Length: 421
Image (cartoon, rainbow, N blue to C red; front, side):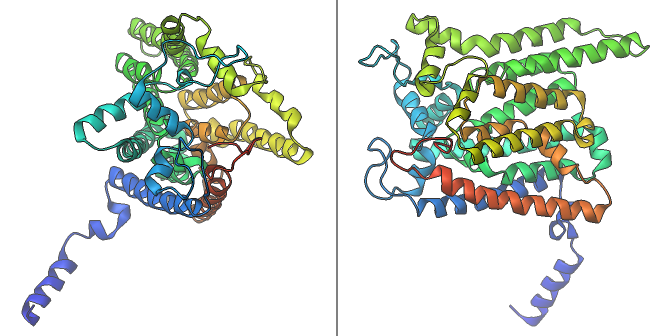
C-alpha cells in the first residue's frame, strides 16, 4: 500500500461513524448479543478446564478416557436422556425394575427440545453432538434478547431508577454459575426464551399471541403452571384500574383463553405420559424413580435436609433467607407486577415440587427478574452502581468456575447435593 493510500485509509477510519468503536452507541440488540457471545466464550473455557479434570465416565456416556468437548456438552447427564428421546422416542410401557418399582426412564424429560434437535439434525446431516449444543446456544441468544425487552417493558420503574438495567440483567444471567448449560444439551435456553416471551406478551397485552409460547413451554419444561398466577394477577390489576376510572377492559375473553392455556399446558405432559403408557400416574412414578426413597409430594424434596451436615443446613437456610430478602427488597418492588409475580410464584413452585439438589441453581435461571432486582439493589449514584455491577459479575463468574469444576465433572459413585448439573 502506498503512503497516499495509507493516508486515505487512516482518514476514512477517523472520519467514519464512530458507532462501531463505541459500544454504548451500538443498537440494543447488538449489545445484548455481544455480551452473550462473550459469556459463551467464557463458559466454554470454563468447561474446557472442567473437562481437563474428567476421568472415566459411564460406558453409555463415553467410557474410559477423556471425552472430546462435543460429547462433554452434548451427552452428559440430561443431555444423554434427550439424545435417547431424539433417537428412540419414549417407551410405550413404563419400565419396571426387578423389585417391581418404576425404573429411570425418558418420561421425566419433555419432548420439544430433543424433537427440534432431531429435525434440524436430519435437515443438516449433522450429528447430535453438534446440533444439540448449537440449538441450546442459539435459543439462549434469543432468550437474552427477549429478557432485555421484557425488563424494559415490564419494569419501567426499575429501569428509571437504574439506567442500563436491561443489559445489566442480561450480563448477570450470562455469568450466573449454572449458565454454562445455556451452551449444553439442556432445556434452560429454550425454556427461558419461552417464559420471557410469554411474560413480555402479557405485559404488552397480546394475550392470544402469548398462548403460543405457553403451549410450547408445556412441552419443554414443567414450569407452565406458575404463569397462571401471573395471568390472574395481571387481570386483577386491570380490573382494579378499570374500577378506579381507567380504561374499560374489553379483552377478558382473550385473558381467559390464556389462563386456560397455562393450566392445560401445565398438566398436558403428565396426562400424555399416562395415556401412552396406560398408567395414569406414569409421570409421578417416573419422578419417584429419581428421588427414591424421598417422596414425590409437595415440599417432599426438602426431606433431603435430614442427610445434610450442620454446615450444609446453615448454608441452605442462609441462601433461602437471602432470596426472600431480595424478593421483599425495594429493588424487587420496583419490578412490574407481572415480573415480580412470576418470580414469587415460580420460586414457591420450585420449593414445592423440586428436589433439593444442585440442579436448583440451574432452575433459578428462569427466575430472571431476580437478576434485575439484584442489579438494582444499588441504583445510584452511577459510579457506585457500576462498581456494584462489576463486583457482582466478577463474583458470579468465579462461582461459575467453582460450580463447573464441582458439579459438571462426573465422579463415579458420587451422591448427595452436588450430584448433577
